[in-house]
Length: 429
Ligand code: PMP
Image (cartoon, rainbow, N blue to C red; front, side):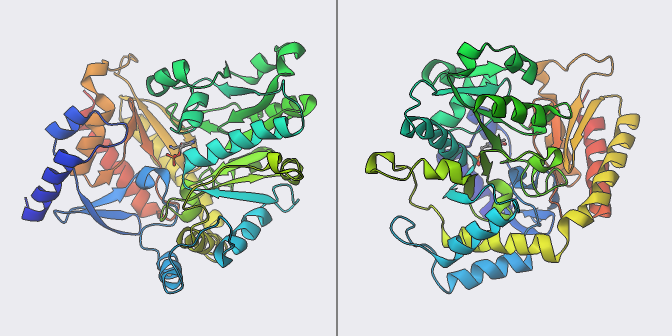
């Protein structure tokens, strides 16, 4: 191992604390130190190359070191890296808010509130939805509905909405109370006396990511919108994972012609370049915050509307248009489907493939259909084995996530699936 690799690993083991990570295991195993990227590829500090199979935790859309995105950040650096959005405007934020609103041509989501990551975009929507009710004197309408096994981030408010037990156990005791349901039928059965107390419902549209990539039945989103509309309840859509082309459309909600009252986006917004997020909402919501000082939305962060983030987000939207990303993606979504069908045919450990656009979950089980014993940590073992074959990705339990940059070519996809096949053969026993 190279001397600097060894030093970085030692410093990491001594001083870093990784997200969602059992640190004892982390320190016992040899990590990869990622040092460089280009397109769908990443290199480690030992000079080995890997396909970025989960788009660097679902963020990277256009590939690494995209010339247009790099140039946008460099150009912005020549102006200024950061200015306060508290008390001042900045050109890139002005332009980006107009561009984002313009993605909804019916003019429904006219207001954009910038934040830093998925969690703070959700936190923002929740607080807006709550304060909207209070500002209008609807003091009894402060409840929230969320779906079982949903995931919306890790700040206290966002985690309170989450329904994935192993992450949110603590929040169920200390976060705010949320009505949790499994489907729209449960909402339809909700008595009027209860729904009258609900401010908003939150959903990951089309597919629940952290819930091992489970898809909602077709029509669920539209049915939920109708249920909300009939009762004056706001719909918050969490498109942190699905936004910016992941599902084959710019936003997942477009598949069912639904416009939410709040749309939360992050990850793909900057193509995975800068930590930045946005909560889009309607004029109807915005207007409820006008008037007296008490109605003001007291929320925000030091890096709100960071110009570097806005600049690269604008460049990302240019890439969508000029490189016809969504059009070019369609055949590759079909190709991914074919490749994964072949994988399932050849690997008895592949129990189910769940794919939504360019998002796939590959659930592994023992060939007899039973789950692998938890202590075998099969998902993690397979992903670690995949390193050897040039593929980086992460499992969710025993579901392997395949979520490449939208820029991946057919050949690159085939490489990734072939690497995964070898890793499953060697790692899932
Ligand atoms: N919502 C969803 C659907 C997500 O997948 C995530 C992150 N995986 C979040 C919210 C939280 O985003 P962040 O990690 O950027 O705070």
